Image 1 (cartoon, protein in one colour):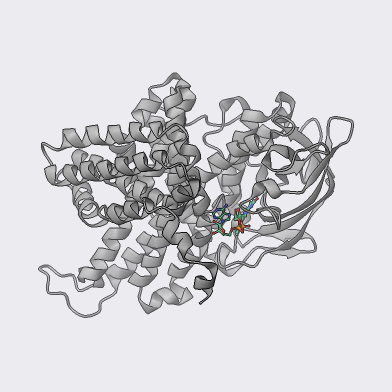
Image 2 (cartoon, rainbow, N blue to C red; image 1 turned 90 degrees about the vertical axis):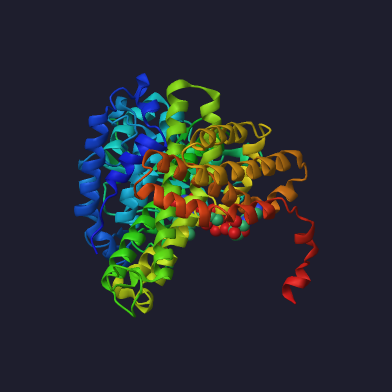
Length: 571
Ligand SMILES: Cc1cc2nc3c(=O)[nH]c(=O)nc-3n(C[C@H](O)[C@H](O)[C@H](O)COP(=O)(O)OP(=O)(O)OC[C@H]3O[C@@H](n4cnc5c(N)ncnc54)[C@H](O)[C@@H]3O)c2cc1C
């Protein structure tokens, strides 16, 4: 089933829902004219449809494998990656100084969304490179950046992130990898890192690892971590490849899905590395990469949701089973009310998650362009929501996609199951969704809820203007925003962090539900007689009400939860 890039949807969202115009009117993004944006979306869409999507199945049926210490990737990946690199699609938001297009992050998010729908396993490779580029642009020395950035941006080299160790998963501060100064400005990095995505491969000539490790005098915990650039091949000053570094792939993981993405156990044995950022300032520098990747992973969820939806819709249009009595019935299962409900939910949720991801991109762009603290705070607030809601949507929609297929969803032949297996990990990596939710109710509320309240004010102001012409849609959105406001007030007034954490995931999902209502309302206002208004009505009347239960759960505190003892759990 061919993939169709949702170029028209992006145009609509940028124009009517997330207001990309405010970004492109800034000097920093002056080159991103309407023509450029249109051309980029169209061409990226074409590449995804014609070059990348045809390689998706091979990523499932012909997994990456380790052969004599070298990783071989799935059939067709090398050529598809080469097309991405040649087209400049690896890093569209990278700075022009080192060869990037310098486009807004919102555009990069749209491109990542389409690439993820086309082939999630392959897309993870450039996604990690993008995060690494961001970290280097913010923290790398001039010398390091002059050597690495042009190669990463062109796609000749790729980037990885190395945080996880067997005893250090969500608790990154438990990492034990070590770095000793070599006395010549470089460091000898040693230790084992696990689950390293694209830790090795054959699609590009060098793999650049950003590794968190401890210097000899380091304090325990995250405060003692430093960040190092550790390349597979140590580059010469002119950028040509020098000797192999002292690192190796120990093994590749066998996984539920995402088989085309090599997930490596890496061993560093005194490998040469160079400091990125300050000594003991590694977690701060790595956070630049992680924030970039969190939005990127949210876009992965959205892209897969779209891919799974298109797949399910095509199947449903073709499959006939029983007869619907509705007028003008086509004879396919699309006419059955329950199938129509599933398809409408999939489409409406994908729209909401996509709008949230793009709005996060816009906030990042506005923060970069204006330097205003309010935009930075908005970007910080939206990042965990975009990550967790985007990926939960990917999983839910892909799961529903299997259901739409009936038995054919459970057999591998149709490819519906691959979407679900591949996307499942997006809720786990890049900080589990539980960790995202805790970040939202703790760190992102340290401003006393200011950033959240500013966003809620914006929603209510819009709902008030929409009330006159579409009260049936505007009123529920306004009411839901008030419930969310009360919940944020409860959160910031609750000092017991465990009470906040106990309901953090429902809070995040409830917040996303309300945001989805806002973006659907904006879409309906721009297209009052069209399909956007009909989809908005479905979302607002049937999906938005979920916020009530979610936000009540969020305010429940921790007492009843901990009243269930470990013995009760085992009973
Ligand atoms: C396919 C794949 C690719 C990956 N790629 C990379 C990569 O490129 N680089 C890299 O460094 N890592 C990578 N990872 C690792 C990934 O980021 C971790 O798996 C993830 O952060 C969770 O850590 P963990 O597996 O140790 O789970 P744990 O930390 O053991 O978590 C288990 C459960 O407990 C919860 N939990 C843990 N701590 C808390 C807490 N304090 N409060 C509440 N709940 C908590 C979690 O949410 C989760 O539900 C990858 C993982 C996979 C599966």
